[in-house]
Image 1 (cartoon, rainbow, N blue to C red):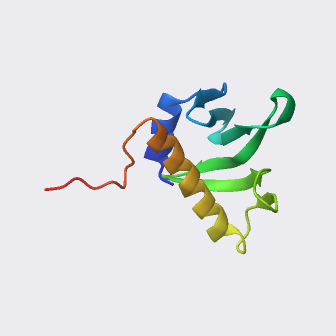
Image 2 (cartoon, helix red, strand yellow):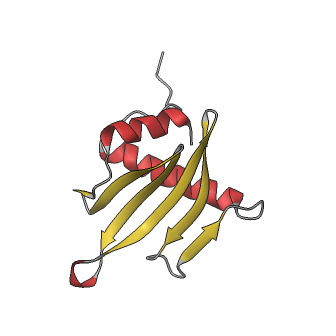
Length: 115
């Protein structure tokens, strides 16, 4: 995920859950360029579950995942960043970023324009 995509998400989503489509979108600034990006779905008794929540930090122009928590997938995913989990976590982050961009028809930095 590129930092420009994170900035676009930050400009269009906030720290409170926003219901759009079939779920809730939220991004929280944790300070020092650390963020929690979450898509949540309704659960029983008015609660919500992470599907997923990804903690990230900014390194230069890149956004790096620190942890992934997905309580809806079976089995549930609880991952911390390591060389062994990095590819899966980066894939999860890219999917979540795209979900945020798509729901509000925002343009990702890697989208090309036709000539």
